[in-house]
Image (cartoon, rainbow, N blue to C red):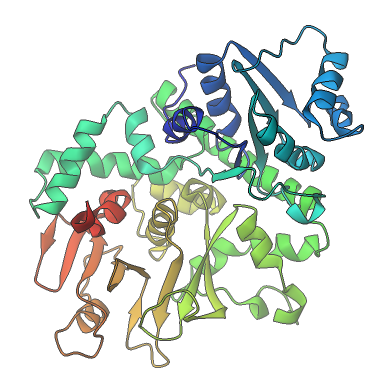
Length: 447
């Protein structure tokens, strides 16, 4: 099976050629392709690869029992497997499933100071809890958070290259409409991405088979796997309450305002009983949390109500897989993605923004006369983003971008819908599938 091209490939190559590099910890939700990408990089770039999986090879947990010194660790590894070769300057040690051996992270300071061997650790965000680690080697390690495949990586999997993506970006910058063929072709690929999501195994199955056969079964198994991991790793919290939140995400996204409310997930449920549960799901890489702004102004961080939020799935394919069979059929057969009250479009736009490094914020005033799906910012201004499942009027976006001085920090807005590229003097219109280029677009003046 062909290995998928991922953005982490460049991150790993750059890391290898960094002078005085530190051990690298690659974190992310389960089954997003961490191990496959690291092993491909390792075998292509090192003469010796020492790969240790703390879940499958539990005996290796004992290699840190004597001390955290490199000599002692190497001696213990070769005691278990004397065939392994440690050659200074040409060996990568890959510690996989870090969450099952917190002591490993403590050793990274020694590996960094020693410098003879390159070290990469990988682990599921569900299980990585630095409070359990004796010393997490602050200042002696580099962290990288990996996501499931974004739309650009999905385009790569479909055979499109960087030249084509640069062509799309140039069209955005010059406000030049795409051709009808480009709109139709990319629109269809984006609908595939919404249905499939970015889990590499699911994407690989879809690309290799050329159809959706078996993909829904794989997605539903992933949903069950996440539930099992909640039971395994949610220490110190009520696992039943975390599962209750997890199982209600699609329910609230199906409502008009999509706001998640603890009081409505169970009889007598109170916010104080669920403290830390939403944060655990966020930190585990299962959900994206979108907070309601207290007012439409900068800065975004610190200007929101932590008790008012929406929850989105990290992977939109898993949201689609969580829906009832009738909704599934409507989307897969009729390609009607607006049927679920726009939740699918909001979920995928939110995920595409997070994968570009943005935190998520929305706004709704008390009278609901002004509502906005997302806000991002550039160096000096606030940018409202409206996601439209249909081509209805954009009253809130028009109000926020009006030249009346009411919102002085907003210079322009962005509307995402099934329409071509355009600009009306107040806001840009882009088709959904160009969302993955928004950060580059808003920062274009700095390039």
